Length: 119
Image (cartoon, rainbow, N blue to C red; front, side):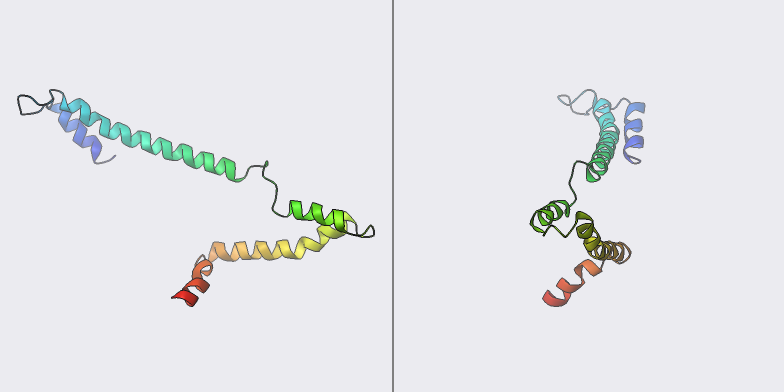
């Protein structure tokens, strides 16, 4: 964008056209499209980022443990309450949270083992 704008401005200042007799008469109009398309591509990227952010935290998506917990509730004996099941998964959720935090601060951990095993 920063390079395309002076390029188009120069073309407009001289009302650039093709030097050949059968060439395009209004080249400056075509060069105006270059910075315009740069702005449009930037807006499209912003729209995609907003859409991805909006969909990633969608409340319509069930948590991965949800179906497992409901299945476990159905097969557990009557003396095991739903509260017991939910309390029982807390350590596993904390482990997942700890791993997420570790990967946030040290992303190289995600590929350390494959690089170690396969070179």
